Amino acid sequence: MDLSSLIARLTLPPSTDSGRPAAPAPVPVDWDAVESWLGLGLPADYRALVSALGPLDVGEHLWLHTPCVREGGYDYGDWLWETHRECRISSRRAMRREPPPFHPEPGGLLAWGETRGSARLLWDTGASGDPDRWPVVVFDAEAARRGSDPWHDCGTTLTQTLAALLTTGIRMPGGRALGPLPPTARRTAFLAGARPWRPPAPAPAPEP
Image 1: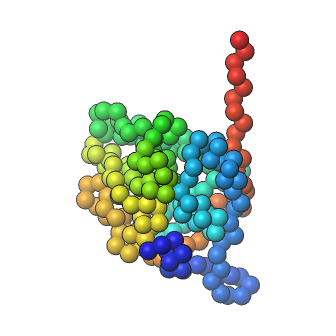
Image 2: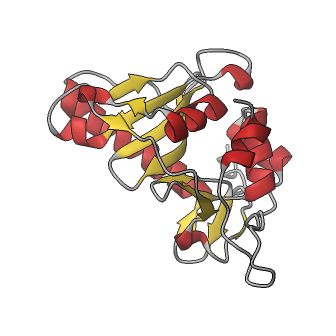
Image 3: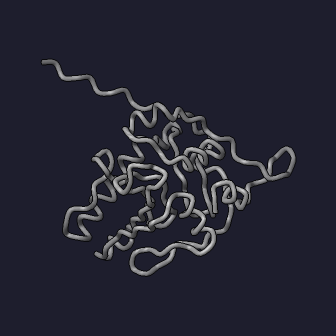
């Protein structure tokens, strides 16, 4: 399933004006600024999906996060840092060894979504020099709390992973399954009124 077929499969909420399905208004993203701040290009399917629909609640269970900000509630840069920190600490406690690297370490995992349950979804940026081939990796906080290996490599791109979530579901650590989810998509409730995100300015160089 390609991205256009995936979007066509999604059931969008009706417009209050016409009663017909309408896509959520996207939140503009300065991709050049975001990628410069990350030091990475991002997958084309992610950029296209975000540019078309903005931050999404898929199947009333999966939040697709985007570079945006809502005052007092969400900041993309802070969310990345907090998610990577949470996964790193929980993984280290569960596995009693060092977890995989996380962005901004070279080849580190980079978060793009999470579920209402205990899963975090990330790209393995070290798997390929081509962002369009980055596979999705799932971190399961529930498995980590049980002391089990919390990691599962889906081996699929963003579009392929979302398609699987809507059709067959994907395997989780410990044998559980995530999905299949209802093919619905709407603006993430806690990101209503979100605005474009600006990367923080680089820290000033220390004085000699």
